[in-house]
Length: 124
Ligand SMILES: [Zn+2]
Image (cartoon, rainbow, N blue to C red):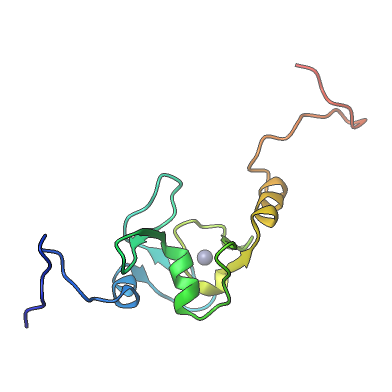
């Protein structure tokens, strides 16, 4: 069976949902579903949406699984997973950018000021 090709030889009309699954090793709810497709510089999976725009794979996963997602919300991985290549919707949660920053603080991903045991900022 031949599929219609666009002017640049790209396959047309294969919906994002279908293409998405070609790049995923899905397992159970507790397993990380590893993204095998392209990744961005931060290590997150990326895929082109139906308009040819690069979108985050774990975000697509949320939409495919009909999780509520506002356009201004970020999708983050929960603390047990914390695997950027994971697209398991049960390991993802939507939140605001502010919550994301709080998470990063809690997980110690950002350098925090050094304090001595009295709570004062350490010098040097
Ligand atoms: Zn995971």
